[in-house]
Structure formats: structure tokens, C-alpha cells
Length: 79
Image 1 (cartoon, one colour):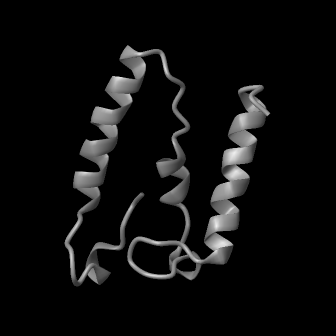
Image 2: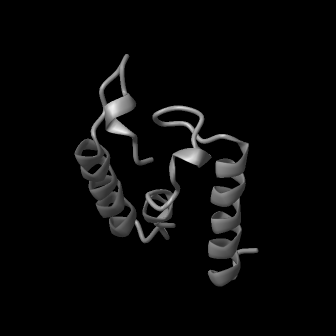
């Protein structure tokens, strides 16, 4: 999940760190032939109005993410 770095006051997490983590996870998934929904790329497009805080999404943001997940599942013929 991309973060709003300037609002991370109690625990610092950078988007570079998130990207590194995702790169590692992507490699592990590929090695095991597991499909990956690149939801992080979509999440980067969601503005602050869809967030509850620096890392969590509000109800509208969650609906947007859920819609993207449903589309992925349909496109992959998993739903």
C-alpha cells in the first residue's frame, strides 16, 4: 500500500520501502507461478480524499479498491 510519507508521524514507512517489499514479493510469487494483482499501482492513483490516514483507506477508498479487485478477478476468469 502506498503511503502519504509526510503524514507518517508515529511510524515512518517510505514508498521506496513499500516498492522494495513489493518487488521481493513479486519475485517470490513469480517463482511459484502465483498470479499477482498489481493493486499497488491502482492504489497510487487514489487521492487523499479516499484515505482515513497516512496508510489506511476510508469507506470510499475501500470501495474503489474492491472494485479494482473484482475487475481483476473477472479479467482473470476467477470470478
